[in-house]
Image (cartoon, rainbow, N blue to C red; front, side, top):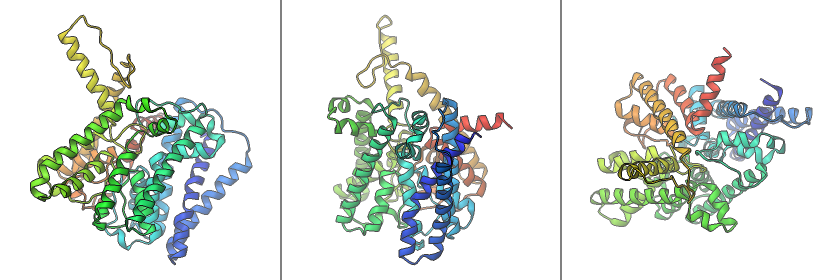
Length: 480
């Protein structure tokens, strides 16, 4: 491992270590001595290491190759997952280091699956850290690092490409650091706005901030065992629903709105597809569940919330959808595979990939009916986008192959068919809750320790869209 790569790793840990200051302060203010120490020690060690590399070698980071960017990003996410587990383990919140790593990785990858059966007894600082990991991982720690550290601008775009989601990635501005700052600026404003709204609707400042962190990161950790259902508030439900959907949209579209490029927003194929999917899913679930609830507005409220929660891969719940009618459950299960938009904080396959395949399918029918007609795949009002079809097809093949392997791992550990398959879809899609014994009212605490480690690995793979981690593992095996 080169000195330049070690420096990048130290800077990343320094940024995550600096983020520990918030829960460390909360722990000190609330007299949570053990938790405060659990945050303080890793924070001091990481900051000291980062500062030593910063002042010890002032030169810039060398240009990173495409292959190197994938390896560095994959390695960073694994290291951050392990580092973020230290407060959970040292504070005693997690019974074992395996549980601590699972919780940390689930947080940073914005999956939201938890091994903690009773989060209400946890120290406030620990609950804050759980939700804060969602916020840090949602927009991406690499993107944050590039925004904060100018030295990472060299090769920064390659690293951001390896971390961000979607088949097509580009810069908003000529300087990648400016792009990263813009994205994080929008992210921060949304988070602040939701925090203020939740506070206005009756939540404490602490609960409002934690749930805003989880919502905008599309993670799903809550400070209460029954999630957002604890508040029994229509205003809170609709606020979270709106911001889960906002977080599921490509953040570059918000930049287009800010710069008055509204036409590009309306022409965005993925956005239109995403809105159509949400409207159809909400309508279908509402009609199916209406006989159970009886009240149309209440049915719409819970249906919209659960649809937004699943399609955004957040994982909040206001109702136990495992008790819903099979038709409604099927709709939600389909959403497990779809996910949000590329360039958002949501997980899943991404709407744009399904849109590309749908357009390609229509073109194939047109070719069959009109063999001599020249057809072209249009995306965002631009023709000739056929090059994306093999990229999407190969991604889906790898994605479903990993789902099959992960389902087999779950089944061999003793999980049932429903839990194995939906658990695999949830972990790789970074959704959080699954069905059956891994449903919205259950935890992942009872899983075998080996399954927890495997799930942790595939959560990272899903967050980095699989290829990044596969390249890292492949290079590691080549050097053995």
